[in-house]
Image (tube, rainbow, N blue to C red; front, side):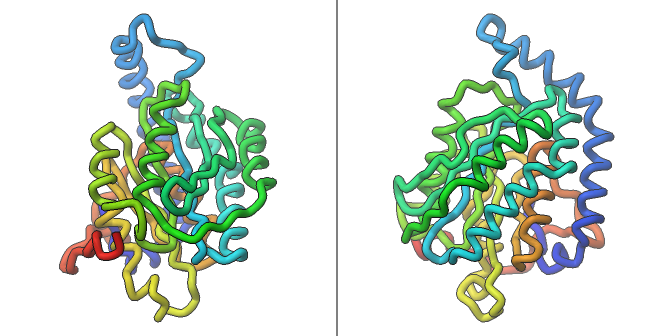
Length: 283
Protein backbone atom coordinates (compact mmCIF):
# COMPACT_ATOMS: atom_id res chain seq x y z
CA UNK A 1 0.00 0.00 0.00
CA UNK A 2 1.26 3.47 -0.75
CA UNK A 3 0.83 6.67 1.19
CA UNK A 4 -0.02 10.21 0.22
CA UNK A 5 3.05 11.45 2.10
CA UNK A 6 1.76 15.04 2.41
CA UNK A 7 -1.24 13.90 4.40
CA UNK A 8 0.87 11.35 6.27
CA UNK A 9 3.02 14.13 7.69
CA UNK A 10 -0.09 15.73 9.18
CA UNK A 11 -0.60 12.70 11.42
CA UNK A 12 1.09 13.03 14.78
CA UNK A 13 3.40 10.25 15.82
CA UNK A 14 1.59 9.82 19.12
CA UNK A 15 -1.76 9.31 17.42
CA UNK A 16 -0.26 6.95 14.86
CA UNK A 17 1.39 4.81 17.49
CA UNK A 18 -1.75 4.66 19.62
CA UNK A 19 -3.82 3.49 16.66
CA UNK A 20 -1.20 0.91 15.73
CA UNK A 21 -0.87 -0.45 19.23
CA UNK A 22 -4.63 -0.72 19.67
CA UNK A 23 -4.70 -2.85 16.53
CA UNK A 24 -1.92 -5.05 17.91
CA UNK A 25 -3.84 -5.78 21.08
CA UNK A 26 -6.99 -6.63 19.15
CA UNK A 27 -5.16 -8.86 16.68
CA UNK A 28 -2.89 -10.75 19.07
CA UNK A 29 -5.23 -13.52 20.30
CA UNK A 30 -6.28 -14.66 16.82
CA UNK A 31 -2.67 -14.53 15.61
CA UNK A 32 -1.66 -16.86 18.40
CA UNK A 33 -4.37 -19.34 17.44
CA UNK A 34 -3.78 -19.24 13.70
CA UNK A 35 -0.02 -19.36 13.16
CA UNK A 36 1.51 -21.80 15.56
CA UNK A 37 -0.40 -24.98 14.69
CA UNK A 38 0.18 -24.33 10.97
CA UNK A 39 3.90 -24.04 11.53
CA UNK A 40 4.06 -27.23 13.56
CA UNK A 41 2.11 -29.16 10.95
CA UNK A 42 4.20 -27.96 8.03
CA UNK A 43 7.65 -28.48 9.57
CA UNK A 44 6.98 -31.85 11.26
CA UNK A 45 10.27 -33.50 12.22
CA UNK A 46 12.49 -30.59 11.19
CA UNK A 47 10.77 -28.25 13.64
CA UNK A 48 13.11 -26.81 16.28
CA UNK A 49 11.28 -24.72 18.92
CA UNK A 50 14.51 -22.98 19.94
CA UNK A 51 14.80 -21.37 16.51
CA UNK A 52 11.17 -20.28 16.18
CA UNK A 53 10.53 -16.52 16.02
CA UNK A 54 7.68 -14.29 14.95
CA UNK A 55 9.78 -12.28 12.48
CA UNK A 56 13.18 -12.48 10.84
CA UNK A 57 14.02 -8.81 10.33
CA UNK A 58 16.95 -7.35 8.36
CA UNK A 59 17.66 -3.68 9.08
CA UNK A 60 19.51 -2.62 5.91
CA UNK A 61 20.92 0.87 6.45
CA UNK A 62 22.37 3.21 3.81
CA UNK A 63 25.89 4.56 4.47
CA UNK A 64 26.56 6.04 1.02
CA UNK A 65 28.60 9.22 0.59
CA UNK A 66 25.50 11.42 0.44
CA UNK A 67 24.89 10.61 4.12
CA UNK A 68 27.06 13.07 6.05
CA UNK A 69 28.45 12.28 9.51
CA UNK A 70 25.66 14.10 11.35
CA UNK A 71 22.98 12.20 9.41
CA UNK A 72 24.71 8.88 10.07
CA UNK A 73 24.84 9.64 13.79
CA UNK A 74 21.16 10.58 13.80
CA UNK A 75 20.36 7.39 11.91
CA UNK A 76 22.27 5.22 14.39
CA UNK A 77 20.71 6.96 17.39
CA UNK A 78 17.25 6.59 15.88
CA UNK A 79 17.59 2.83 15.49
CA UNK A 80 19.04 2.44 19.00
CA UNK A 81 16.17 4.43 20.52
CA UNK A 82 13.53 2.52 18.52
CA UNK A 83 14.94 -0.92 19.31
CA UNK A 84 14.93 -0.23 23.05
CA UNK A 85 11.59 1.60 23.14
CA UNK A 86 8.66 0.35 25.20
CA UNK A 87 6.43 0.31 22.09
CA UNK A 88 8.81 -2.01 20.24
CA UNK A 89 9.19 -4.37 23.21
CA UNK A 90 5.43 -4.47 23.80
CA UNK A 91 4.85 -5.31 20.13
CA UNK A 92 7.19 -8.29 20.50
CA UNK A 93 5.46 -9.52 23.64
CA UNK A 94 2.00 -9.67 22.08
CA UNK A 95 3.22 -11.82 19.18
CA UNK A 96 2.27 -15.51 19.12
CA UNK A 97 5.84 -16.57 19.95
CA UNK A 98 7.09 -13.48 21.77
CA UNK A 99 10.51 -13.07 20.19
CA UNK A 100 12.05 -11.84 16.95
CA UNK A 101 15.41 -12.33 15.21
CA UNK A 102 17.09 -9.15 13.99
CA UNK A 103 20.32 -8.25 12.18
CA UNK A 104 21.66 -4.77 11.36
CA UNK A 105 23.54 -4.41 8.07
CA UNK A 106 25.04 -1.26 6.57
CA UNK A 107 25.34 -1.08 2.79
CA UNK A 108 26.63 1.04 -0.07
CA UNK A 109 27.71 -0.09 -3.54
CA UNK A 110 27.75 -3.57 -5.05
CA UNK A 111 29.06 -6.12 -2.53
CA UNK A 112 29.66 -3.39 0.07
CA UNK A 113 27.78 -4.92 2.99
CA UNK A 114 28.86 -4.65 6.62
CA UNK A 115 27.19 -6.67 9.38
CA UNK A 116 27.26 -4.28 12.34
CA UNK A 117 25.13 -6.49 14.62
CA UNK A 118 24.66 -10.14 13.62
CA UNK A 119 21.48 -12.16 14.07
CA UNK A 120 20.19 -11.81 17.61
CA UNK A 121 16.97 -12.96 19.27
CA UNK A 122 15.20 -10.06 20.96
CA UNK A 123 12.51 -10.95 23.46
CA UNK A 124 12.90 -8.46 26.32
CA UNK A 125 14.60 -5.24 27.39
CA UNK A 126 17.90 -6.98 28.17
CA UNK A 127 18.29 -8.65 24.76
CA UNK A 128 17.16 -5.46 23.00
CA UNK A 129 19.73 -3.40 24.90
CA UNK A 130 22.50 -5.87 24.10
CA UNK A 131 21.70 -5.70 20.38
CA UNK A 132 21.35 -1.90 20.37
CA UNK A 133 24.70 -1.49 22.15
CA UNK A 134 26.48 -3.27 19.30
CA UNK A 135 25.00 -0.74 16.88
CA UNK A 136 25.81 2.27 19.05
CA UNK A 137 29.44 1.27 19.62
CA UNK A 138 30.37 0.31 16.05
CA UNK A 139 32.56 2.78 14.12
CA UNK A 140 30.91 4.80 11.38
CA UNK A 141 31.68 3.96 7.75
CA UNK A 142 31.06 5.76 4.50
CA UNK A 143 31.13 4.41 0.94
CA UNK A 144 30.61 6.04 -2.44
CA UNK A 145 27.87 4.28 -4.39
CA UNK A 146 24.24 3.31 -3.76
CA UNK A 147 23.22 -0.19 -4.84
CA UNK A 148 19.77 -0.86 -3.45
CA UNK A 149 19.65 -3.90 -5.73
CA UNK A 150 22.75 -5.43 -4.16
CA UNK A 151 21.53 -4.59 -0.64
CA UNK A 152 18.22 -6.35 -1.28
CA UNK A 153 19.95 -9.44 -2.62
CA UNK A 154 22.32 -9.60 0.36
CA UNK A 155 19.44 -9.06 2.81
CA UNK A 156 17.49 -12.00 1.42
CA UNK A 157 20.65 -14.13 1.50
CA UNK A 158 20.96 -13.33 5.22
CA UNK A 159 17.36 -14.42 5.79
CA UNK A 160 17.75 -17.64 3.85
CA UNK A 161 21.00 -18.64 5.54
CA UNK A 162 20.34 -18.10 9.22
CA UNK A 163 19.23 -20.68 11.80
CA UNK A 164 15.83 -19.17 12.50
CA UNK A 165 12.33 -20.18 11.47
CA UNK A 166 10.25 -17.03 11.27
CA UNK A 167 6.55 -16.79 10.59
CA UNK A 168 7.42 -13.75 8.47
CA UNK A 169 10.59 -12.43 6.82
CA UNK A 170 10.94 -8.65 6.48
CA UNK A 171 13.62 -6.50 4.84
CA UNK A 172 13.63 -2.95 6.22
CA UNK A 173 15.74 -0.84 3.84
CA UNK A 174 16.56 2.83 4.35
CA UNK A 175 18.28 5.16 1.92
CA UNK A 176 18.66 8.76 0.81
CA UNK A 177 18.97 8.20 -2.93
CA UNK A 178 18.05 5.99 -5.88
CA UNK A 179 19.78 2.82 -7.02
CA UNK A 180 22.81 3.81 -9.14
CA UNK A 181 24.77 0.55 -9.38
CA UNK A 182 24.17 -3.17 -9.62
CA UNK A 183 21.52 -3.46 -12.31
CA UNK A 184 17.76 -3.02 -12.27
CA UNK A 185 16.37 -2.38 -8.81
CA UNK A 186 12.83 -3.38 -9.83
CA UNK A 187 13.97 -6.68 -11.33
CA UNK A 188 15.91 -7.47 -8.16
CA UNK A 189 12.97 -6.45 -5.98
CA UNK A 190 10.62 -8.73 -7.91
CA UNK A 191 13.03 -11.65 -7.63
CA UNK A 192 13.45 -11.14 -3.92
CA UNK A 193 9.75 -10.86 -3.04
CA UNK A 194 9.14 -14.04 -5.08
CA UNK A 195 11.11 -15.82 -2.34
CA UNK A 196 8.44 -14.81 0.19
CA UNK A 197 9.92 -11.76 1.90
CA UNK A 198 8.30 -8.39 2.42
CA UNK A 199 10.38 -5.30 1.60
CA UNK A 200 9.55 -2.08 3.46
CA UNK A 201 11.21 1.26 2.83
CA UNK A 202 12.44 4.24 4.78
CA UNK A 203 13.28 6.99 2.26
CA UNK A 204 15.44 9.60 3.99
CA UNK A 205 14.58 13.15 2.91
CA UNK A 206 16.19 15.08 5.77
CA UNK A 207 17.94 17.83 3.82
CA UNK A 208 16.54 21.16 4.99
CA UNK A 209 16.51 22.72 1.52
CA UNK A 210 13.32 21.70 -0.29
CA UNK A 211 15.08 22.25 -3.61
CA UNK A 212 17.60 19.47 -3.02
CA UNK A 213 17.77 16.60 -5.52
CA UNK A 214 16.04 14.33 -2.99
CA UNK A 215 12.90 16.46 -3.02
CA UNK A 216 13.08 17.06 -6.77
CA UNK A 217 13.37 13.33 -7.38
CA UNK A 218 10.40 12.56 -5.11
CA UNK A 219 12.41 9.92 -3.30
CA UNK A 220 9.36 8.80 -1.34
CA UNK A 221 7.56 8.02 -4.61
CA UNK A 222 10.68 6.26 -5.91
CA UNK A 223 10.65 3.91 -2.93
CA UNK A 224 6.92 3.31 -3.32
CA UNK A 225 7.17 2.46 -7.02
CA UNK A 226 10.59 0.87 -7.31
CA UNK A 227 11.80 -0.58 -4.00
CA UNK A 228 9.07 -1.90 -1.69
CA UNK A 229 7.01 -5.02 -2.32
CA UNK A 230 5.49 -8.15 -0.86
CA UNK A 231 2.51 -8.71 1.47
CA UNK A 232 1.58 -5.58 3.42
CA UNK A 233 4.63 -3.61 2.26
CA UNK A 234 4.83 0.10 3.00
CA UNK A 235 7.22 3.06 3.00
CA UNK A 236 7.46 5.84 5.59
CA UNK A 237 9.47 8.91 4.53
CA UNK A 238 11.62 10.78 7.03
CA UNK A 239 11.48 14.50 6.27
CA UNK A 240 13.35 15.93 9.26
CA UNK A 241 16.21 14.96 11.53
CA UNK A 242 13.96 15.56 14.52
CA UNK A 243 11.39 13.05 13.25
CA UNK A 244 13.79 10.21 12.45
CA UNK A 245 13.56 8.30 15.75
CA UNK A 246 9.76 8.52 15.82
CA UNK A 247 9.46 7.27 12.23
CA UNK A 248 11.77 4.33 12.95
CA UNK A 249 9.83 3.40 16.07
CA UNK A 250 6.49 3.46 14.27
CA UNK A 251 7.92 1.43 11.40
CA UNK A 252 9.44 -1.25 13.63
CA UNK A 253 6.25 -1.62 15.67
CA UNK A 254 4.22 -2.13 12.49
CA UNK A 255 6.74 -4.63 11.09
CA UNK A 256 6.93 -6.69 14.25
CA UNK A 257 3.15 -6.66 14.69
CA UNK A 258 2.57 -7.54 11.02
CA UNK A 259 0.18 -4.64 10.57
CA UNK A 260 -0.86 -3.12 7.28
CA UNK A 261 -1.46 0.55 6.72
CA UNK A 262 -5.04 1.57 7.61
CA UNK A 263 -7.61 1.95 4.88
CA UNK A 264 -7.84 5.47 3.40
CA UNK A 265 -9.34 8.00 5.80
CA UNK A 266 -8.69 11.52 6.97
CA UNK A 267 -5.03 10.76 7.59
CA UNK A 268 -4.06 8.05 5.11
CA UNK A 269 -4.94 7.56 1.48
CA UNK A 270 -3.56 5.61 -1.42
CA UNK A 271 -1.43 7.39 -3.96
CA UNK A 272 -3.44 8.33 -7.03
CA UNK A 273 -3.29 10.79 -9.84
CA UNK A 274 0.49 11.07 -10.17
CA UNK A 275 2.91 9.96 -12.83
CA UNK A 276 4.75 6.72 -12.01
CA UNK A 277 8.47 7.02 -11.29
CA UNK A 278 10.93 5.91 -13.96
CA UNK A 279 12.65 3.29 -11.84
CA UNK A 280 15.46 2.58 -14.30
CA UNK A 281 16.48 6.22 -14.63
CA UNK A 282 19.64 5.75 -12.55
CA UNK A 283 20.20 1.99 -12.85
